[in-house]
Each structure stands twice: as structure tokens, then as C-alpha cells.
Amino acid sequence: MSDLFATASYTSKAQKQRAREQRFSTDSDLLICVSRELYERKRAERDNVHYLPHGVDFELFRQAAECTEPLPELADIRRPIAGYFGTMTAHNDIETMVYCARNLPHVSFVFAGQITGGDYAELCSLANVHLLGRLPYEKIPRLCAGFDICMLQWRMSEWIRNCNPLKMLEYMASGRPIVSVEINEAKQYSDVVSIARNKEEFCKAVEWELQNDTRERQAKRIEIAARHSWSHHLEELSKLIEETIRHKQEALR
Image (cartoon, rainbow, N blue to C red; front, top):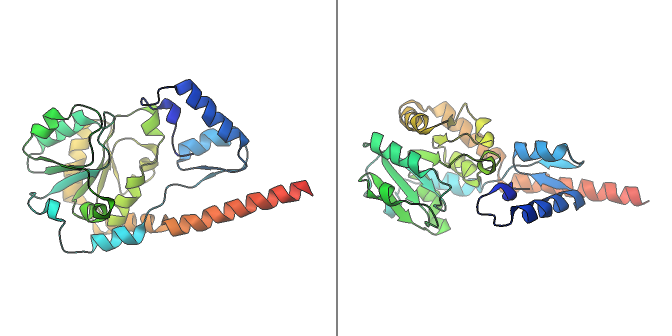
């Protein structure tokens, strides 16, 4: 289970989606939840529920972080850079980004992704804001490596609060500092990720991370990402599937 899709505003038939999620959850022999919040919800309803967060292509992002050649799209952008990659929608906290860009004029704010919703006109008009549009995935690791601050900026909702952003571990693998809104999965790493409750705190956190991040915090982020490589998660998932099959076979004897 990767998200509370029935609570997302883009879900047109929430009741139908909720029923579908419940049916899949009930009928499955094994349920994997990528966030602790989803895990706690489902653990109260059924057995054989496990928490296994998203993984990361660790080596890909680490190699990019160690590359000294800048991505051409970032070459002419003034540093420091606070960046984000992903689809740009109305769920992104545009107001917070406008506030940060206006109050941190010495910071360049870079966004890479296709705009599919929301009003980005004011954000685009600011001199220190750069929208790169959609980039091919093979460029994303080097893009991430070019950020001085990585951002997780969404408008808070039940859906966002309970999600587990795939890009958080990609950010961590790069070693770069991270500023996030109050996503529960990010909160567990609050010693190496700055958590902001509002636009003022987000702005202050960007500035704080630029001035106060340490080699120790960087190393811990990288270590966290290494523990969540896709290869490691594949081994864990394989064990859970094998164990579930074994228990079913034993029950049929």
C-alpha cells in the first residue's frame, strides 16, 4: 500500500476508491505498507502486514553526487540552489515557495518537472526562480547532485501527511540537506532533515541548512539511503513472500 488514494483531491470517485482499497487490503495474503502511518492503520485491521518503505537506486545517486561536472541546465544558475524535481501540481505549496523566493533573494530556487495544475505565474515571475520543465530521468541524479538544498514542499493534507515521498531517499543518497513539510515519514529523520510547519519555518530552515549542515549529518543521510537500496528491499520482500507461501501451504496440509 503506497498511498491513501481515496483522500487525494484528484480522486474523482473517492467512495469507490476507498471500497477498492479495502477489498484489496482484506483479500490479500500479504500487505506491504510504505509508510508507518499506513502500516499502523492496516495492522489494526488484519494480520500479516509489514512496513517496507520505498527503496532507492543508491549507487546511481551516489555516483552522480561524486561527479564534479555540473549538469548543463544548472551551469548558469547562481548558487546556492534550493531545488525540487517532480510533477508540479496544485498540491505543491506554491505560496510557500513564493514566500521563500521573495525572502531569500540570494538563493536560486530550481524546479524540474511538468506543470499539470496550480497557478505558477507569480512564482515564475521572480528573478531567482528557475523552472526547467520536465527532464529525462537519466538527468535527475546529476540534477539532485547540483542542489545545495533539497525540498519537499507540498500543501499539507491527510494524503500528504501519510505518504512516503520516493524522492526523499534519492535526496538522502545524494547527501544533500533536506527541508520538508510535516510528512510523518520525514519526521522520523528530524535529526538530519529540517521539518517546517509553515512558510516562515520553511524559509528559515532553508537558510539554516545552508549555514549549519555538517559532514556527520551528511554521512548519516547517505547511510540511511544505503540501508534502503532497492536490492536490499528486494531481499526483504522475497523473504516475506516466501514466508507467506510457506504458511499457506502448511495451513492446507
